[in-house]
Structure formats: C-alpha cells, structure tokens
Length: 141
Image 1 (tube, helix red, strand yellow):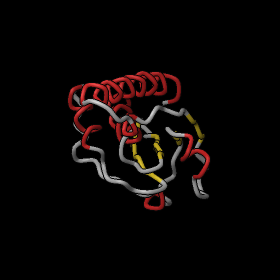
Image 2: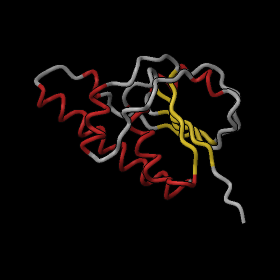
Image 3: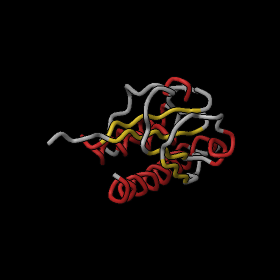
Image 4: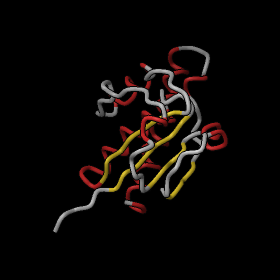
C-alpha cells in the first residue's frame, strides 16, 4: 500500500516569521505524512530571530527561503493555513481546492523593547504556533 502524502501550504504576509515558524513545526509533526510549504503575499526574507527561536526548540529553519504564493500555483494543496489576519483578508486569488484554515498569531517581529522583551515575544509566539501545529496534525493529517 502506497502512502498518499498531503500537501500543506502555510500563508502569511511576508513569509518571514510566523509562517516560517509554522512550517518548521508542521514539518516536525507531520514527518513523512505531508509535504509542507510556506509562502507570503509578499517576500521579506526569513527573520533571523525566527531562525534563532526555532534553533532553541531544536528545529533548524536556517535553510528556509521566503517564497511568494505565486511560486506554488501548480501544487495541488489539500490544506491551507493562514497565520495572520492580513494574509487571510488580502490573499490574492489562489486557484486551489484546499481546505482553508485560519489562525491569527501575534507578530513578534513588531515588538520594540529590550532584547529580553523581544526574545520573550518570539518565544511566546513560537510556543503558540507549536501547540497549534501539533493539534492541527492530530486533527487534519
């Protein structure tokens, strides 16, 4: 019996922080059950703090790239998750029969303050995304 992998797209505004963290956690939890991609309606590059916070959690996203949603039009996604309200509300038409999900996660890259305050914001968002992805995989994959 051949395992049919699902295709999962995680979408955010700039594909730099929350969607990158979610891609890392989703890949961690789905293992071989799915192919996971992340994209943005813009591309801002992968946030170095997102890479650092995931490294603390034992997940390497340092090789991730910031990709535009148009790069994935030919992939038959089964599941699509938007991780910010802006992307959910402003996503251009994307031809897909994917089942769509939305959860707005706080954007830690917007926090101003001390290194400790910024780190705390990234840590909190990372944990929220981790818990969401763990449950998502249990329920949807």
